[in-house]
Length: 298
Image 1 (cartoon, rainbow, N blue to C red):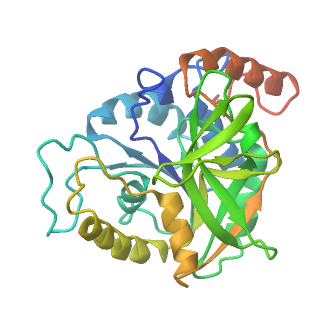
Image 2 (image 1 turned 30 degrees about the vertical axis):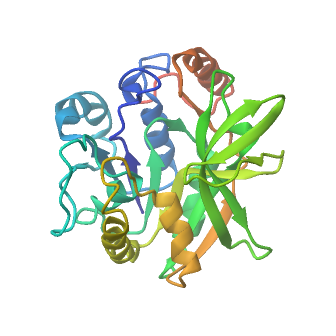
């Protein structure tokens, strides 16, 4: 099993590279804890998706810490990694979203793999659930490991979540990328694709880009990326392709069986600067309870 970490985002709402914001007692980043959990649960390689201009920064921080514990590779997400027929608008300044980011790793991922965000703290149980699924080794079977939406919010503003619905057999029905916010005492979701607003309930679950795939996903991504650029030929300045929605499409189109797995782990993250102190306190509690050593890398 391999771990693919999406780390190309600059964290605009947080105000910089939140992927390398120290939150552990010895300067550890969120990403350190994810890699530590992955190693503990049996993952064999880490692949970072990053911006090319951040390569030296990542290698001298994260890379230097973990390369003696697990093999590491770096892949650059580039705006020009697109089909030949695409004419990139002059005002397009960033790559094409998480779907393109995963596709960028097609030449270095060689085993079933788990996709995670670099700036989310997932908890050990999420990696255990992913391991159990990936070890089954079934072709064209994917999974999204989900959390209750109410357990993924911040008191400091809105968040974006892949609100997820499954059927009675645990298979995926839909993932809707949505803006989640408090409105008049209720939690409301607004689809990023322009759909109608809806209410979030206590049992509503969400994907937070924690997804398990076998290698067949790359053939599917190649097909869908071509379709995406043809369908959005007149909207290439702003459009993005989301890996979560492609996961849903893979099931609806009959390409793959996609399963919804709910973890008991607690999701934490830093969306806004004000979230940092809460996360640091939560990490310290986990250390005091013996779930992590005080110093991760020795």
